[in-house]
Length: 90
Image (cartoon, rainbow, N blue to C red; front, side, top):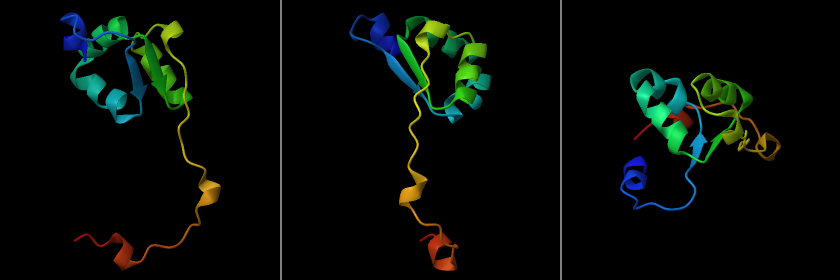
């Protein structure tokens, strides 16, 4: 997406969801990528305050970050013990 934006082939807001692995692992491998993304992006939506703290520590401007909880309602699901059949892969 950043390449398309540089080539002026992408118009409109650039909104990035921050879900976890992207900033906890990838940031170690490509720290410069995030600096460019934070400059070019319009809005960043981490799914928790912990991830919000992480992207802010990485240099994302505060005004571009809004926590967007996107979990599931666990009350809609009943817990049950796993059986071998449930954990077996084809």
